Length: 183
Image (cartoon, rainbow, N blue to C red):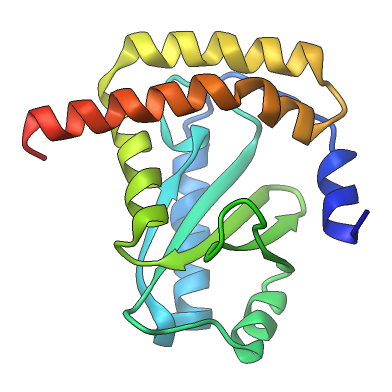
């Protein structure tokens, strides 16, 4: 098992009620990230559960960094983020093209670096926007997250695996919503 896999597998899972400070934490952190790696950044967005008002979430602010067309992160970018106390965990094996960083201090952050307006960018923004406009889905998703936490309190992979089919179904509903609403 690699260092990254071991770290993910042995992570305690804790889902807490939505906290409005997550939006502020995102804004402050996004500012620092943009300054550190501005030459490759096209856009930075708050995504994941902490970006959806009212949604229970793990208290980790997820940050999506979209890179400019053709831009790739380099060792210099990894070092610039390391100066902000981010650990580079490599490319996500399930999502090629997604490069993952994490910071675990008083506040916890994850950065996903992906091509701006590529499939990974669009899917994550669409999923977030769908949840923001469908409160009934937020309630149902929160119940799934709580069940996943109960079943896998010490395994992030178990937590993610429990949610996976529901999330995929919701992504499909989000695509239908997007296509039918003219977004």
